[in-house]
Image (cartoon, rainbow, N blue to C red):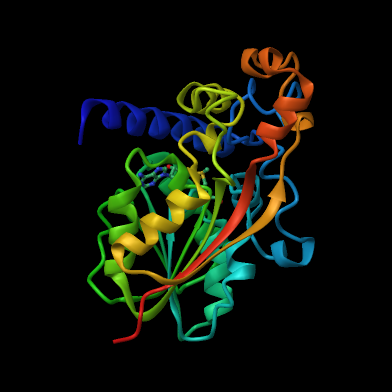
Length: 283
Ligand SMILES: C[S@@+](CC[C@H](N)C(=O)[O-])C[C@H]1O[C@@H](n2cnc3c(N)ncnc32)[C@H](O)[C@@H]1O
């Protein structure tokens, strides 16, 4: 891994390690820290993703550590008996919900690189009493599972955090069974960022200061191309939530002030929580 990519990975691990430690101490979580999602520290991206009935029986600390930008288990149409893998499983909420959906004949794996998150997730599983679950330690760019062993890959606001997306998509394809499904919630920049208005690299860096969850987000074209490059078919990107400048912190970041209200609104409107579907062709 390059030094730059290692720096990103270390920063991501440190950020989520500290969030998990807060949750373990009983504090509420925000994927962005106190200074990037609004004055209150509320996490506008992760708010309201799960309905109350769905969370019935899920340990409070798993719900408190929910840091996603979608609800992949609800959208993935999981079936009894299936094997599910959650890339970047955090406090384990989507693994627990998947385990419930696939039932006792199915199995749900969570994969995360952050020790504190794994600790939190394992405590949540112990509290829930769910048996068909295992949390694995590792990088989503090097999945510790055999080829063709998983029916469905889910993930919730994690692939955007990967310093290099290509190995992540390649690994997802490798571990899926033929006919297996990629069913991932992520932040995507729809239509890219207009070069005549902004320096994309600078804007992406600035946006990372209000939502660490979207640092490194791919454009829709980049996501499609990346999935095609490793062999996926039937690719579909469905917007599940759009953002406005009201989701930015006050005072507005420098780039938003520089652009002015109208252009800043246009730019922020291109970032959207998105459900990304694809299949590994059956042979
Ligand atoms: C935004 S949180 C999402 C957690 C969870 N999916 C949820 O919805 O609550 C990102 C999680 O992904 C993990 N993560 C980030 N990059 C990773 C990588 N390259 N390999 C493994 N885990 C990673 C972090 O440790 C953290 O737990």
